[in-house]
Image (cartoon, rainbow, N blue to C red; front, side, top):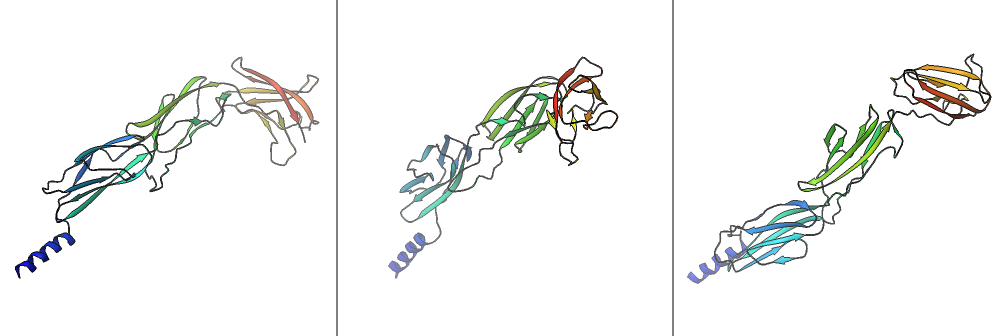
Length: 278
């Protein structure tokens, strides 16, 4: 009878719930490429006959405390398996290795920035790739635009400069503390207004007006000349344009015309030609 009771207790210990108070620590569970993680077995149990670390990347170890390097991006389940003569216990933690950002950004214009431009700076985000899970963490974008610092999780910001000059734009992208990349580019803003070189005042609602993209504050005078040098139209104000007619309201014939755009309170002057087509 005593042998039967002993056998029953032994079977129950092996097949029932684990009696090992298993545990381990990892000094970090989130990082970037080539992350070094320190693992420590914190189990307070005597009689351990075997120990197996499975790092989730097809590598294992049997040491009490171990250092492991993750050199690929992914989400890895780390398992520690301990065995005694009568029991086996398993515990796991998740380690997330993120893609380190490789910063680059573009603006809505590559050159010839003016005071009238609203610039869109945009970073093409590096998306996380893993065969085991999807990275749901946000990248943190820090934009430094002149005197403005914008911290957000968006990858596009808008900026309009009010004065001429050279300005530095800096983007810092962080995947995690200590895992970031930074890039700075310089742009030059000039007080030059854009005017098209062709327009079609035919009443179809598209490109019917020849207008100067000004800042909407500075007062200008726009003069239109025929190819013979005769002034046929004048527009004054903070917004100036030409609708393809003379100052008397008569339609002009298709062809090339000359313009002079001058700021009324400065020496700023632009000259050029525009082709009118109906």
